[in-house]
Length: 329
Image (cartoon, rainbow, N blue to C red):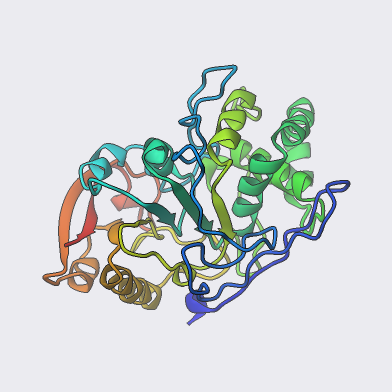
């Protein structure tokens, strides 16, 4: 099954940064609170920040006062669903795991309630962007300013065609620039993994949001960032896992490997394992007969929520729709 293969890519060190940066393999984490190595090859100690909060800043940049929010426009983002998700959070949260992080809307909403966050995704470009914001935010902002100055249909086409960029800061800037200027903020790749979305029709796209990027950087200060598949995480008792996978019967072209029904079934099996380990599990998905059947069990409660949808494999299904919020019991 393509969606269940273990795979990993190297995340190179920016020039002059020193050291060798290696991602963890997509594998079962080692025994211990911290899990596998992070993308810098450092073993997790499992220790929470000494101030007891994720970054100690509650996601607010100390100079601008801007509160962190998703830095990408992400098809299927959960900003509109966050109020419903908040109703189903456990009273206490030890560590937080989000293996389909995408834009990370729920994470930004609750980051001041958790001691450590494990954010991951199978999309390599997205996770490189997260890591560069965390570690090299100011350099990234300068790269984005250069893209803003040069933005045009021709520049967009040139940057879109630049695959295989080695410098991770340049690569992150390319990803964010394309995300801010492409049609509908859509991230779509073909079977070869090449980004193929046309330019959007924006008069003044927000290519550089320096204050938010710096607030995000502060929020991510203590976060564990991984490029890996969802079955590599190892939550324990008292932790919270939130899964926002590609929805059933809707858009699934975030990576070259499509998220099919077998992947949905594998996720359900993993989620049951996390539940048995004592973690609280929340999953959002389409409200379809397949998903309802998949989680029909005394161990799961299926809630219905209304959300605005802009993409679907069928044009008639776009717009407001019912979604499911599935919680462990």
